Length: 156
Image (cartoon, rainbow, N blue to C red):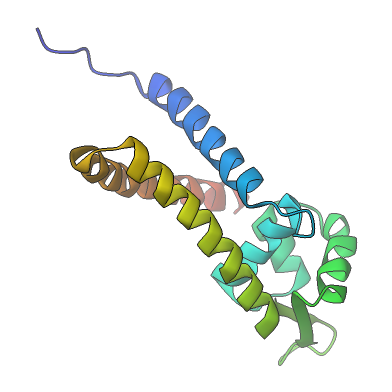
């Protein structure tokens, strides 16, 4: 007898739980006592993915109020992770970006996370399961893109 087709709500619940657990494990596993907080890592990741942006745009990407980021951005700048330059078309604004040292440090953190994840994958999944995992990653990317476009449409 064929397995029943999973309900989208059941899939959503299971996916959210699994992604949250994995995300939490990756964040805590790469956290060094002298390293950036989870909030700082999130901001650094946004700048790494999107490149230079204004504080307002960064707040939008983080889905927080600009006031919530002010102190965090000042700390990241003081710690040498990010720098600011004048906006090329609006002298009243700043563009924030990762410094060369910030890029180097962030890439080192990413390599540590990926190494830990690769070790866990190698220790727990056989070749067939790793193939399925890669296929699932493609599906998850599609879901993330759909959620992102839904959020953008809701803001318009």
